[in-house]
Image (cartoon, rainbow, N blue to C red; front, top):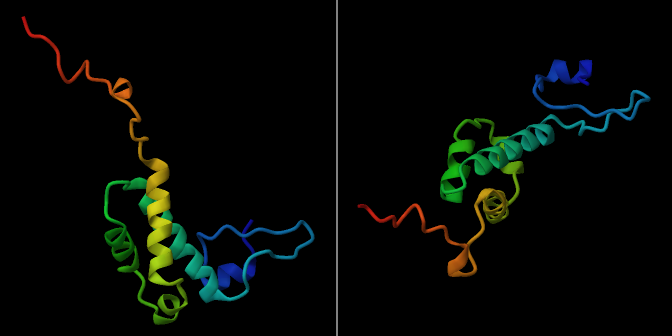
Length: 112
């Protein structure tokens, strides 16, 4: 549910949580809310591109951020890179542990 306060500050795509009594569970700081949006965008991009390098995922997502205060408020670069690597790891197929797990039927078929 969106609150009127959030509509005034321009955070239209942010999901606002309330406890049912009208108390908001979102951060009152606009910069903090925008940092969350940026980090969620990085996570989304990382999940969709499991083979792209983590650095390029972060660079592409941060290219659209022009507010210096938001960039300064982001976690350290190494933490963001680890987050990207973790999200990419979740979407990659597992590595085979033995030769039996590799499906070679399609690769090597006899032609007659």
